[in-house]
Image (tube, rainbow over all chains, first blue to last red; front, side, top):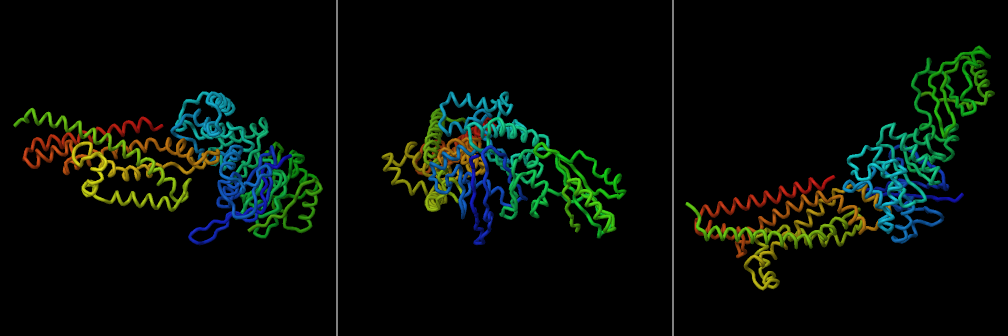
Length: 334
Length: 218
């Protein structure tokens, strides 16, 4: 599979009032053709800067960013504009032209590319069909809902037949239902058009729902990168753990209690482990938090439990879970 | 006390002259001021054609002409007006200083309207591979159209007010009539009539601008 983007040791420094600020530090990663790639981090982590280096909306201070093996920093303005037509982008605030109709907005990239007038309209209508907004073609964006506006933005992004779609917090301004609909649409476009999608978000639920791989950015550095399933099963870095495991909703019964986290994937999600534990060993545990979700179509769950105070009992219980094929991690309680 | 037929005819003529001066001066001022305003906007810091030197030079000239009181500008420009129109008095001659005086006002107004366009729109245009010129023509200008039209109404009303001032140094129009009959000859009703007409004209221009801008804004 071809590499759409290859970042090697990318640095980005800003100067603010004479003070230097590092937005990106030594970021290296590749994005493969056809995948849905997530970039997640807290606000201010540098993810928006990172996505803007992919179409050179931001110039980098060091390293290289290549798009299909072409170094973006070497491109002259004209060549860069041609490349940008292959890298579509959608935004949190949609950025549609308020003074133009939906149809006119969708035709915009075709106009930039110099597509003949008759063809522009035909193509734009085709894109509006994909996002299900043909009947809104003569409306102005102000009259559409947030979800509809983002659909128009997606139609506009797809019109120039890009090789990749960058989504910068594309669902952050939308309610959960609309977010779900937009993500479903993106997933469908990824499959039907084999379009590579890069998703910037601060919400783990977005990554869970449609990303194949994810990069976790923390304070301008790449904290962790890998398959979404793998990172959910076994997050190695602190920023990844913070994102994957939210804080426990219940306090343990004693301050010095030993807590463990059980992580189970599709294969074991349907087995009643706790019931089996009680049945086979007679030992009891206290469930502090539990949740399951579908990640990339596979049932996935985690549970935080409090173990009984006796050391031997603790070991017995941990052994039981490990033999059952579960991943067991210590949880530090603060 | 009624006004003589002669005065009525003179006022009618004056209205026509005022409208002519306002129209042509505004048109010419936009022909120069609009590109100048775009240049001021686009060359400012962090904008699509950011250029410190160009911005400083254009900004300098705009500020100088704008800071001169219009009456002083009128006098200063007499030689230039004579050079361009062959005369320094009359309706046509008045168009020259009116245009020069309105250019910097138009330029600043345009710059301010364009600055209202959200940076996100420009980022979207850039990400689509649009050139800076294309971005200005097809993204920034259409997006700021309602604001540009409102600004135009204010500018045209200002030019109309200035045109009355041009009467002082021999320009035509209602201003000259108000000065000649109302001030020098103490014909108060002529003074009030011309003033009323000027006020109505300004109101009509402003209101039309508001209506058009509202209709255009989507």
